[in-house]
Structures are given as C-alpha cells and as structure tokens.
Length: 168
Image (cartoon, rainbow, N blue to C red; front, side):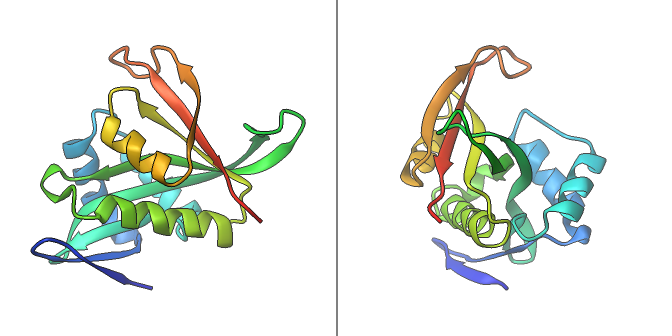
C-alpha cells in the first residue's frame, strides 16, 4: 500500500521497501548518517522484515527510509517480562527533504506495522544524544529515554536508548 504525503513542493510516497530499493536505501544511509552498513545487512532486513521497512520517494527517487528488526528480550518496562520487541535499527531522511513530514510519516507507518503486523509489545531505538530533532520526534510518538549508552557510536558519542510500550 502506498501513502501519499504532501510535502512543501513535492508529492512524497511512503511505501514498503522492495529488494530493488537496496541501492537507493544505501545511498540515503551514506549521505545522511555516519553509521553505514554493508549491502548484506540491508538485504537481510528487507528479506526478514518487509512489512515494517518503508521508503519515502519523491519523483521516483528514494529520499528516506526506516529499517526494522524484531527481537525477543527482557522488557524495558517490566523487568520480569520476556517480550517481543521491535527495534528501529536505522532511520534517515536526506537533508534537503527534512521538515516536510517525511520522517513523521515513515515513523508512523513503522509503528503501525510493528503493532499490527509483527505484534510487538515494545519498540526501542538508539539515538545520538546530540540529535535533538530526532529525539523530539520520538518523544511525540511516546518514546521515553530509558538510559544513556556511553560511547555507543564509533566516534565516541553517547546514545539514548529510547523505548515505548505499545498498547494491546
């Protein structure tokens, strides 16, 4: 299913990733984030979690993506519970396409798929402590800062581990 989001000047389409999108996703990853992954990493996530892996297109070009994983582990909210968790592994929008609602639309579709397709109990992510725009976006979706991960990134920057409990 495709979802059209009206941007400032462009029509943005949010849709599920396709295997043929790998080069476009990797191009966005390399341009927008310091953390880059090899092709096989993206291919694995496209193959295993296609219902919650979304891309944003403008005029047929990929300008953003959100990449998931589903895991089992101890709850961030109930230390005695072993739960199914969604992990937001990587999320990027090219700089020239930010502040148009693309990130919000990608995150919304991701959260919906995590809840309704993969039936996870919680969703979590790691985000640079300096990435205030992303942190504000996550907080609007109910994510809470659970802890600081010291020296999480290769350049030594800390990360917040943020999580949200999904209602049943």
